[in-house]
Image (cartoon, rainbow, N blue to C red; front, side, top):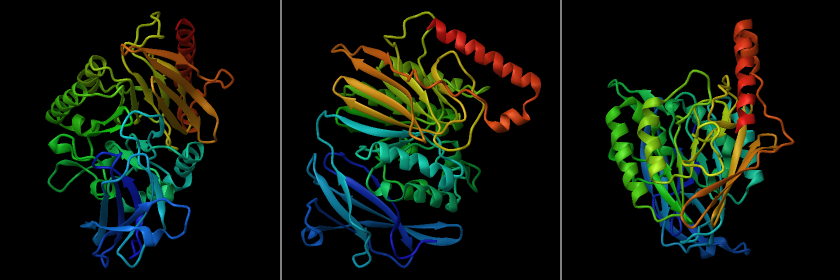
Length: 433
């Protein structure tokens, strides 16, 4: 339960990241005032004396029969490429001092973290994913979560585990979250809606389609455009799918950035056996190819896959569309499908990804939660916008393709035989690529 002391603190953005930073937190209903204090970072402990106070806003949220207050402060008119100290509270009760650094207002090197589904056993087993990722890349610009952060949309205790797992990292590294199917619920009016926790908990850009505020949005960061799409909202309502595609067309048409990264929950090409989001793919993939999307980051299938939509036998050195990734950061695991599009796969493996962009090069690394480099590739972009793919998947680490233990136990002999057949086919296909 919340108290008068701020908890569930997260960094986010609603305006230009180079000149603004937003902070969100929660308290009990006794706290009615929201205040932020900010100063340029200085090794001196005299932070409070130099800080400027900024008044925030408070939102009253009724959840599980109790009233909670969610607070937001927008720090604006900041200097690009500058480190700041900040804290938030009610003017009397404060958090500790945190630090963040604004990006440059022009292209410059940076790295970010990407997570697939957390969803289950968040405190006990997902925590090592976010903490391992931060330990690997403590200067990450932000963290992308590709949906299903929790498993029960409005379960406060699950959101509590999610915020506890990230802890103070969420106060240092901004969050860009995309909703999955588990963030949606059927409301009393019979309509499917995003979690009651979503908008109170996160500060995200409000530049998306009218029906998808803070679930579909875009943000520009040091020469790269990041686009979040709400695949669950689209798959529930074909009008939302069409509206989102029209909006995406405008976002990608008027895009001055060298790189474009898209994230959404449901994969364009699935990794799990028996799954296929054909309606979503038919609407979105042509736009990705037409407007030069470089990388698509996804979740939902609780396995790992990375690859391209290119015919067998055709050189994959020069992709004619984005590199697709499906990943999972939590412990819930599915059967791996070993599909034709995949160049690297993993089963029964928790992972996090570190992605770095520097001028004309995008570098991708996937790590297991125990810290081993599992997958790696680079995209280099020519002056004409053509990408060249260099596959650096670690040769010294064999692909982890064994079925999760629960599948091995419950599968009948013919099902195990079928999986082994697909495994051999996958290996044979890879030898042709």
